[in-house]
Image (cartoon, rainbow, N blue to C red; front, top):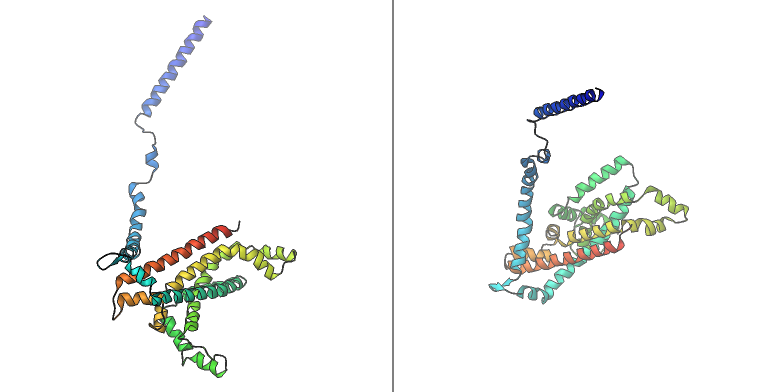
Length: 316
């Protein structure tokens, strides 16, 4: 009797379990399990970033890729066919070689001077209070956009033959022998618009320098000069090299300020390109394309050397 009762209870229990399971299946039968696809965003959300980036891609293609393709194709065309005559004419002409030499001369000197002044100015700027620091950075941002014809006109008014600063300094005997419309004047002009750009590029790089490094160097007996040579400059070297390359490219591509100040009286690559494309006498766009391609190749070479130096001098 006991065994029969126990087996009966087990049968009742199994039957109840089966009934509960069947009721649960009926209740959940109409409910679909969550799928991975339902958690994904809708298709229009996936396409929205592409749609927003389409205008940028269109502008980049029209104003960057298309002109580069035009320059690349037409630089190898002469006499109605494919030829290297344009490059032979440029490399064989002392006049065009002088334009590259003058452009490199101005770019190198203005980049080095602008970088040195910006490095000293940025180091001093990081020591001033916060509000004054923000005001100087805002002014530097505004000054970096002051270039082209307005900048050349400002230099003419101040430092021209009859400029206000020129006459004042000549009376004091401090400005003898300087001529704005010369190589020295162009270097001064180029350096002026290089400094704000260099300050903006170097300003964030100083965040990598810790404040206690100077104190630690002083405790070890290092003076300010040794601190900058052994600690600060190695840390800033990648930023300095990168800023120098950007300044060099900025100077090599400068045109408006130089032309407004010197017209065509100073032989530069950019002035030669503009004269060949929009000159009043000779129009040789294919030769201008070859000059542009050589200038781009020069910039690519300098950039490649910069990346190699950064890879070798990276501070860990």
